[in-house]
Length: 398
Length: 200
Image (tube, rainbow over the protein chains, first blue to last red):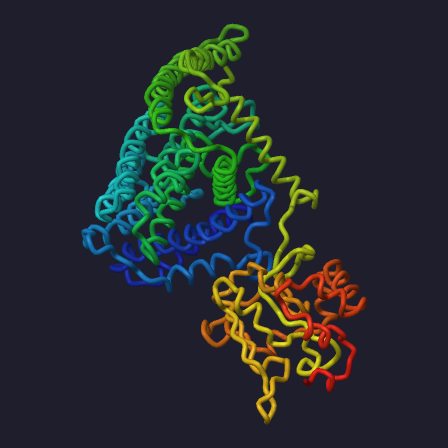
């Protein structure tokens, strides 16, 4: 019974594909998967925009949108209609072709990235043996799209936004990819399905063997989250957009549906990178404890995705935007050493697995945790040393 | 060196706001304007209006078409034509009183110079319109408002005005400028007089 519910969508797809002639079946399978991904994540996008606006409102003691429909639930529809009916303006000096292609380059690769993510048991559109590599390769297109938009608009603010985006995203791609390195090392595979399978089983017969429950996994998840926030251009790393400094960066010259596509691409990118974080560290679609295994796998996945999205919204409502030099310092001086040490910690964790003396488990935990924890404290102190933190004092103005 | 504890502190603060805004109505200070409104303060003002006494705006209008406001108006948004009878004698009331609120800057100078307490500031502010010429040019009948309406808008100020008017014509002169004609004031400030006595 629970199995049938768990495999509901898989069997539905099999049944649908089975209705067609054999020659069409591989194609139909792909089309159905693509349609499902598009439908589910676009709905999630609409919901997230509403929840984000409501949530940010509540964080700032406001109501948030509550005019359209009951409790403002139809706000996404209103936004959609507004976006569709707006005039599409292309600046006279713009590079028209690049200006047109940039939003597409933003959205299409993000949608491709969903192909390799297992959203439930047997629910990955493609089980690709280099899935993680594919994910990052496609994800790198976003940088290209942002720079294309910034460059082709022929606007100084757009260009500044594009430059900032390139600098930020290339810098943070390094910690992002390196923070996933330990997972690949220990799973021995780049396939996201295999990585999820590597997190099967239970500690002590009840707690799932997710990577977060190891010291390197916990550190890896935190480092990954920071890098992922920066990579998806979300606050506090939204320098490329920076409304107060460069208006909206690469989005200045976009209106109407092209702007909407950038918006969609940004949110879909956030979901994709959250989904990757879930797959790598939080056991993908697996239940956290043994006695909750009966809940369908896709429910777990989307529950965790919702948690990630809520965290992103919460962070956006809390943290002020970083300064450009602080951004670079954080990536190169802080995150990069820590992710490298985290990889060493994971190796140590792997080679101490056969320790059998009394208290070996605790010793192993503390050893691996301190390999990342001590450098975190030392590096943090070193970087803050000599920096004045507190209210600014003005020398010239009395 | 706080090493990230500041971020946690901030997250706790925003979480407290988020949860608190559902339980503590005092946190939500938003007035949802078209549904809820704050009462306007006594001194609120938008554009001028013409106050009339009694029921009939045509007969009870305090304005005598002395044109002081028209002359004083800095952006010159007031246009007045004196009403005359068949023999060409002035009737001491405006035939036309137009006020272009697209030009008016709400400076209230017309109110201050009016010797008859006739022109006063309205507080109506929902004046948006699709027609920027016709609808923004207010005519005499658009501007005419009963004295009770004025009392409702500015109770303190209108109370003083009413007391001054009730005290009689002599007191009205104290507000009028030395140059302004006191004689017409005697005719109009006695609001309760029959309409016939308005005629010269």
